[in-house]
Amino acid sequence: MAIVLKDYARFSSAGFRKGWEPGWVAYNPLARSMVTADPPAHTRVRALIQRAFGPSAIARLESKARELARELTQGLDGEMEVVEALSLPLPTFMIGEILGFDARQRGELKRWGDDVLCITPAPPSEADATRIRASIREITGYLREIVEARRLTPKDDTMTDLVQAQVDGQALTTDEIVNNLVLLLLGGLETTTNLVSNALRLWSVQPDVFHAVRADPPCLGNFIEELLRYDSVGPMIPRLTTQEVELRGVTIPAGEMVVATIASANRDEQVFKDPERFDLKRDNHGAIPFGLGHHFCIGAALARMEARVLLGAILERVQRIEPCEGKIPYSCALTVRGPLSLRLRFTPA
Image 1 (spheres, rainbow, N blue to C red):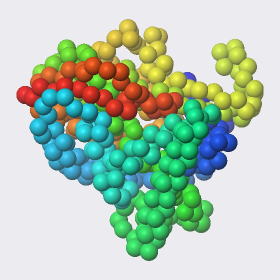
Image 2 (image 1 turned 90 degrees about the vertical axis):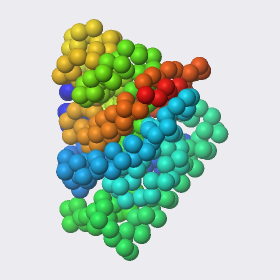
Image 3 (image 1 turned 135 degrees about the vertical axis):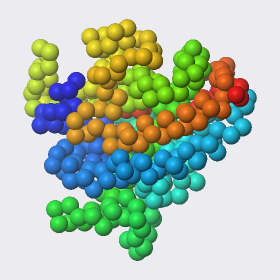
């Protein structure tokens, strides 16, 4: 696993582009963002963005996150759909604060994101293909308008930093900025939204875990780390071989896609005892929920903070969470995992 994720000379991140930009799409901004680049090109662009996701920036945002979490968890009582009502609003607001856009469009942003992330080599149907291509046009058009506005009127935000930045003496083009904004936007939305939704679903089906965390709030951090291992929000990472390589006695030709399955690594029985069991007291050393190497998730600290704040607020307001009847629809994306909608029943404290 570590070899595939860290040895970019033999396992290139261009694997993302091969899987994310099939002929029926023609253009996918994610497939042209820094997530598909290897050093040194990836390093230069990531350095422009890193500051906005550093510890000091996250600390400044936490008070705003707590305020919004208190608002979102007021009146939790009875049956509700939690993705739209609880899991999505906080990360939308936070990534809006970082990048500098209007978070009130969270419904549209989530719809666009779900469509872009569900791109596969062959579309499920022509109707799906038409909808996904429309979503790409809409999200990139929305971001282009904001980029052009920042060129005219700069602000103190990451979007302005990208507009004004230079790499090797040249400014990033509008296309380069938009492609990377799509990556940051969707990564910022999907990671925390799915993490919180997965947490609430687990609490509803394993009430003993919910009551244990509620009785000992300081162990919430341990709960989040075990959940990231147990129910990976980013289950797979594709890479593309640049030359013939051998892994565990298997020869892989050059130009082949190799998929590093994070979800499997996080349940490796040689690393974790009884890995199929959720263990609140587990030492999660060895888990890799946010990847490894130069592509380690830039928003990992932000996602952990958002989940800790929002789940902590829910623990204060609720004494029981129960599942509702019906099948839970999940995203069809290979690189993210979480429910598209989730109905739960809350009993207030």
